[in-house]
Image 1 (cartoon, rainbow, N blue to C red):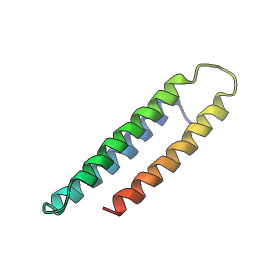
Image 2: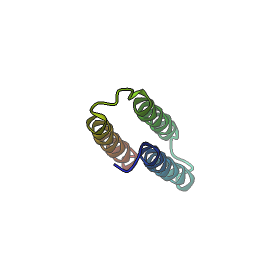
Image 3: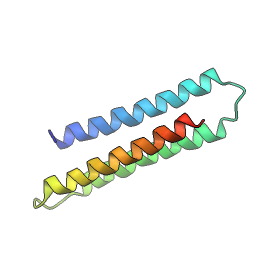
Length: 89
């Protein structure tokens, strides 16, 4: 992992891309029920907040690589879940 700053940027970019994809879906489907897509946007924002909070909570200098590797794996899993949900809209 390059840095904490880069990890936060990656999370921001990934979540931002998902939200943008959802907004594009909403624009291309104006007659669809938008409550599901709005819930997914809120869930995406919550995932972002949770991941950044976990990054900021890493306080100990020991096992930094292990802690950030776990956060990286969790990020990957959460992003995949959000992508699956957005594909099902």
